[in-house]
Length: 373
Image (cartoon, rainbow, N blue to C red; front, side, top):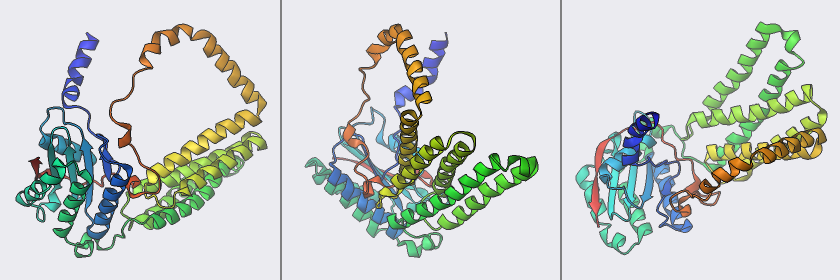
């Protein structure tokens, strides 16, 4: 009975298919674009955003699975929420290669500059290139046609004070957040460690609140003119503060050896976050930093602290000796592979195609047009 109800609840999702995640300027699930093609298109999308303030993304799929491309594009655009909240200046171009269909979904705020008939003419003009499978050429042509119809960012009052996303500025901001995070993490560690009894409950609570809220407010003020969600930078501050909080607590409650190991791991994690000088993808920088910190800390603690190594080996031996039946029963599932082409994944670091491209809360209302070739 439970399985029946589960299938009934999942049926709409199975019929419609999963909604694509748009977190980069170019998402190529079909794998028809080379790394060079994705970089060229992504660079133009980043430049379009810097010049006009409009956030446009490209989604390349094989097929919409029988779903009308208008519905598919709207569903993807609503999940992405491209553009700025209130301005609704997002654009989503969907290319269904196997269906030979294209759709440009236009945010509410862009319909004045890109009415449906103009969008249809833009798409129809790309028919010859698409029939020749020159997808790069068609995408670049669409972006250029969109650019010439939009006002510059300086002509939009709400965008005039926002600076284009600069990888150098993002790196400098991340460096500042690392410094703030180190200080905040160490102070939090002292409040929860050797200062705990001296401060008392209420003073400790006030100190922790001040340590967290003051840097967060400064961070929000520091990044409010950058066209990347403020939340991403607040998450960066929290990540670095958490790293050095762990280091400080280890120094107070564990051994100096473990504290040194964790401190070294945190330093490496910070360096990894800053290693890609050309990236503006803050979330990816944080992910790499956190992964480096966790993996390096685990390895160094196990290698340099024999008691931990012995405990882990005993746990591993226990699971290996008691999981024979589990492994044999689940081995048939291990051979399955995820669908889609791997070439649609993230490209090499330090490129426009790796830029952070999450939506800023824009709305889409069905404006745009579709075309076949």
